[in-house]
Figure: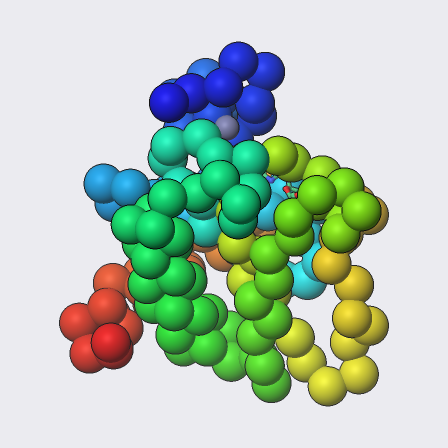
Length: 145
Ligand code: AMP
Ligand code: ZN
């Protein structure tokens, strides 16, 4: 279920902090600590699986469903030109946390196509964005999908 030493399992268990945006039975969505841009989210399964190759189908679908609702929420809250949905498997593909997760990255025309941020997000800004996106998520969940 939970993998010792896994930072995302620690977040799910409440042993490590996060700026939470949404939670349901199978998934947790929170702010990426090193955002590529404003509103960078991670949607993760609560149950540990290292990558796409390990995650079970129900969990995969739960992450996909939530990714779509959260993409609607990001569009509503921040109005970016587009939203990147990225998922990396294995260090060769750029994966750095080995607990399956989906990145949702708001993008504007002219933004560089980076997948990882270099600087840690400011706590107050991450908290404010999490609240703003969570409120938008509650609004769009009613009318989307
Ligand atoms: P990946 O390279 O696809 O495995 O992405 C891992 C992501 O997790 C990166 O974008 C990191 O910035 C992010 N990350 C790592 N540790 C934390 C943490 N404690 N809280 C939130 N995001 C994290
Ligand atoms: Zn884990």
